[in-house]
Length: 91
Image (cartoon, rainbow, N blue to C red):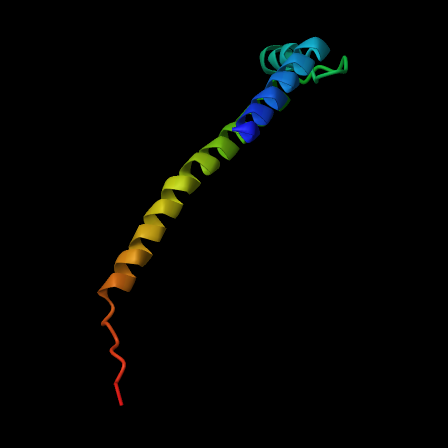
């Protein structure tokens, strides 16, 4: 129970610190306007499109890895269960 309370407090502290520093505002400005966080540099629409396409590709790969891993694990379990059971000879 103490572990859960500690984790909740750490997450809450992280959110409070991120809010006061302006991390959420910076991320929103990056996504909407292409402004690089904590600088005055603005990305061109082409560069921003490439960044968003890369982010989408990474999210797609990550979201498809878990179900694929589950399917492959199930297949290997089924294949192992179909193997003949080896019996040890008793002397």
